[in-house]
Amino acid sequence: MFAFSDLRLATYCPRKLYYTRQGDREPPDEVAEVRALAFRYPELLEATDDELRSLRIDLPPAEYRQNLRRTRDRLDRFDDLCDPAGRDALLTGKEVRGIAQKVLTGPPEPALVSPGTPPKNGVWEPHAVWAVAAAKALAWEKEEPVARAFVEYPKVGVVRAVRMTGGRKAAFQRAKRTLEAIDGPPPRLRDSPKCESCEYASECGVKTRSLRSLLGL
Image (tube, rainbow, N blue to C red; front, side, top):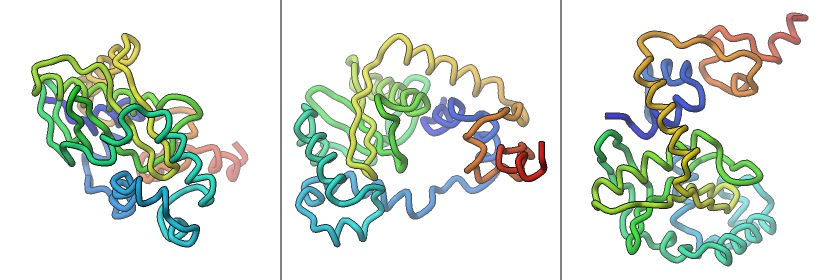
């Protein structure tokens, strides 16, 4: 049984997953604070500038409200995401298991809430794998196909739909193979910007770009 979070991390950096498994896997408090915003969209649309500044958002208030309005206007299931049928639901499929922050019905679609920010278009590959895993688990539970999931980025008021394309399913399969192959520390990434902010950089021993510049390498 593969955990949603393990599949996501294996796609991002297998070595980070290895270190995460050795330590405390509870997310920091700020993650819970950001995820809570995903259940307050109607309120946030009407919030004052001062109220928004007091929250864990990454944009000026006017830009944040504009993003959230665009999300509301273009997303066919915005109302359902504001009042989902299921919250923090444990989904168990044939081979994957994990928590979906929201579960919609009619049709069934899971929504996952990221504490980060999205790329300019679509979602990051680890989040696409995360979404495929949740969709597969929900499909197994409901005994019907799930063609789409959502990844929410409440820090910036953006929600992205993730369709179950062949490319995303292939990335999910690669993540499974990566997990199956881990029996010790995987190789370090090389010249990756991911290492700059990684909390395991010193333990890992990877030479980040900033460290290399200090050393004159």
